[in-house]
Amino acid sequence: MEDQVVLRVVAKIMIPFIIIFGLYVITHGDFGPGGGFQGGVILASAFILYGLVFGREELAKAVPPRIVEAFAAFGVLLYSGVGLYGLLSGGNFLDYSYITPHDPRTGEAWGIILVEYGVGITVATVMIIIYNMIAERIGDE
Amino acid sequence: MTSQLPVLLIILPLFGGLFALFMGKGLLPWMWATLVTGVMLVVSLLLFGQVQEHGVVEYLLGNWPPEYGIGYRIDAMNGFILVVVSFIAFISTIYAGKSVDSEIPRDRGRLFYALWLLFLCGLLGITITGDAFNVYVLLEISSLTVYALIAMGKGRDRRALTASLRYLILGSVGASFILLGIGYLLMITGTLNMMDMHEQLQLLIAQGKYEKTILVAFAFLLVGLSIKMALFPLHMWLPNAYTYAPSAVSGLVAATATKVGVYMAIRFLFTIFEPSFSFIEMSASQCLLVFACIGVVVTGIQAIRQDNVKTILAYSSLGQICYIVMGFALYNEDGLTGSTMHILNHALIKGGMFLSLGCVVYKVGAIHLKDLRGLGRKMPFTMAAFTMGGLGLIGFPLTAGFVSKWFLVKGALESGHWMVAAVIMFGSVLALIYVWRVVEAIYFQEPEEEKEVTEAPFSMVWCTWILIGLSLIVGLWATLPEEAARSAAQAMLGAG
Image 1 (cartoon, rainbow over the protein chains, first blue to last red):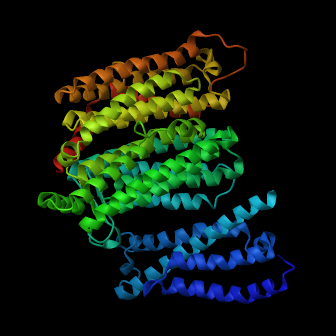
Image 2: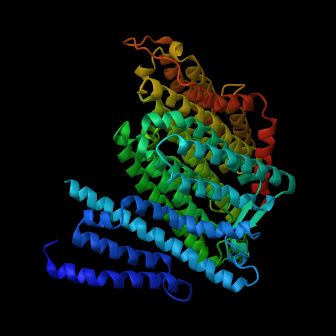
Image 3: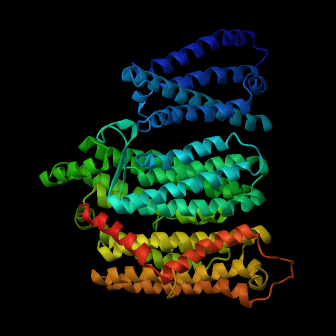
């Protein structure tokens, strides 16, 4: 699809907005509709669009598969790391109020937002991995 | 720190599995996995000690009250299962080092151990949790990872892929049934905490409300759980999955995954529903006993007709699951004690036997009956382990199998189920035939062509013998596991 000028220009314009919207949905997760999963999928759709229009080699140049895989694990680690932080600072696992012991409300807000980002990162990267695998299969044939 | 033990048991394999992804190609992921499972074993033993000393241990995630958040709850039953699972996990991880290295491409090693640890995280999570929905989530974690682990056997035999796909389809059906069942229960009780759910259900049943919904939920759960624990006639995913999985995976999965399925069934039938309601009013007792009895006979006959030794063991596992189900379906203390004992004994025996076959795969490369001919002289220690395990399957006196079958027969006679006792005896005769076919090939038949085969590496034989040796010790000196199993049975029956 590299020869389609309209497609390439529109995709290039759209991608930053999709990414911003994805991040917005993740960040907004703790007050309203949205959250890590939905935001993560939107975030991934920006990368998948890039891969569809410019080809999977270009996508692999922009985000190397090795890095994508590492981030998939990092997202879960961020989530459980927040949980572990609560445990290490004296509370139970996933007790966010121990993140800032003098001000439990702020700690809870921090905790939930970090957890949402953890989910978002993992969902987005796993979607990219799935896309890469399917594209690889089609590319081989 | 001791109050944090329950959650440590779950986050150890979770973090361990994720960190394993970042490790290189060499021995490092394996050493890391061994370390993690070793610590898990220590933690589970400490927990078991706490439960024996102080009774039920509870842990609230995020310090939410149990009605809202996820609470872990460990009593004599799941404390026991946790020790069994983490012990088998530790031994088969040590074993996996050499075996996985020879069966799976080097660059996949880190992925293998990441899945391996996440699988354990799922199993232990199902066992430890006191929240019905959490059971489902962790069930999916353990199932998805085990599908991938089985599919990794494709290097040795491409049929691993279809076996894994079949397991995926049936496993997902089972898991959806369980989810639907939990959903219906949530709808009418408004809670997911198991103890809370139990109380609400008791009230609803006493008031005669929502009878049909409870019936539907019960039916979905029973069928879903039967698929997950591979109870006859919902077992067809299991034989190929065990046959084509990498050797270490066969050992671990055969010894732990279906056992945790059985544990889930016990938890749902005894803790969430009132046992007298599940077994008498809903007649789960007759239903499960009939299927389990037919299952013992049919899978025994199928095991006799197989040529691949791993498939023989897979069918034999199905028969053993039927014994375990029989035990708790009898709904009395001896039956449930026998059932719990058999979870431990079968995990040790079948784990050990699959590991000994892994040694054969490592040296010979194939495990059909004809490949085993004459191996008795060439791999004496491995084959002796296999034979001792076989005696345990038959239920020969002085082996672990005898002890648990003793309790099962006792339980059956206590409830006046003569037929069940007869089927247990007949099952032993069938086991004698299929074990003998293998033993005959090992010791009494001459190989078709002479091949140079030597004993498997020390680390593999050693792990096999730890499992088989322990099963022999349980057979000779059963007091400690019997006490643990009995207190587990009492906890289950006394809960209602």
